Image (cartoon, rainbow, N blue to C red; front, top):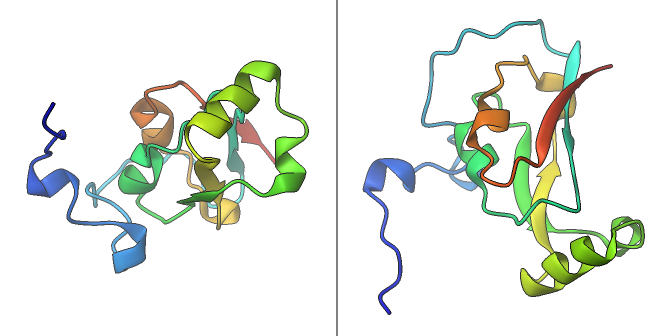
Length: 116
């Protein structure tokens, strides 16, 4: 089976490169700090779609710290182990402007927005 290939526009910009989004103009609903993303750790599979679409760099994908693993359900632990504990992490939640792009981009439905 061949690996999945994506067109360059979907893979050439990442937070690690200093580019936070493929989408530069958004209609954000709130000022930064009013809403924050909440990640359902039992659902997240670390696919990084949220990090790619976030215009303000709220997310990065990395290894879920052990202290956050203990609260996972059995299903969450199985998913975590299968994906080598790679998940979306919040690196700058206070910058969130509630545009909702991360919620729409997450294929697992693991992200919601909540008021601070």
